[in-house]
Image (cartoon, rainbow, N blue to C red; front, side, top):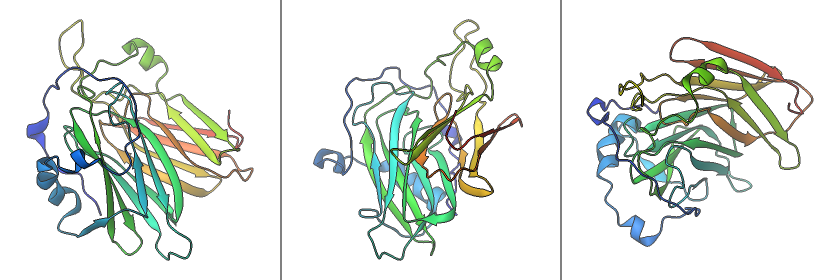
Length: 270
């Protein structure tokens, strides 16, 4: 099991600012490969223990912007793409941002291990950092790929929505199916406060309050589940591989205050 490390000393206000211009970061550029990975060296034991980690090339790819337009909503896409005849299958994916106050963004688990699966979401990036996708296969082996993202201030950036509006729409969900692409998307309305955001009126920090778990199933068949933290952006949104079979899709989300939100949608979306 991949664990979330304890790094209380790193809960600190972030430097403000975010840069412009998007570009996909697949294989790291030469200059990024040379960047020191001090944070990962410190984090690794707390996340994966002493288990060996293999190069994820050919098994999992990670797409990110090289330079984020908005550090509070950085798009990331993880793709499992095993070649035909490969007997391996991925049972979980863990997304890590080395320099974030809480480095483990979330772990996504599959009830049925996957040979091919696309998953994307939006995350907060606190400062220039490596982002890592760690895949665990059925036999317990770990495979990792990484990308370097230039962004700052994502965890402390003020919430976009007014607190009253956020509470009024709390737990509302949207589900869309893109049959022509073999994908679907689910969004949960939730402020996902990081605990590092300052109330601009009171000048006090807003306590952390976020969606800590989410599961999606079609009929009685689980598609995937997530255990997440403060690095998932406001109004958590996930796009994923999906083949509609006519059965309804049910999404269950639970937040850190113990609230549970459950909604069912027709497979065609709403």
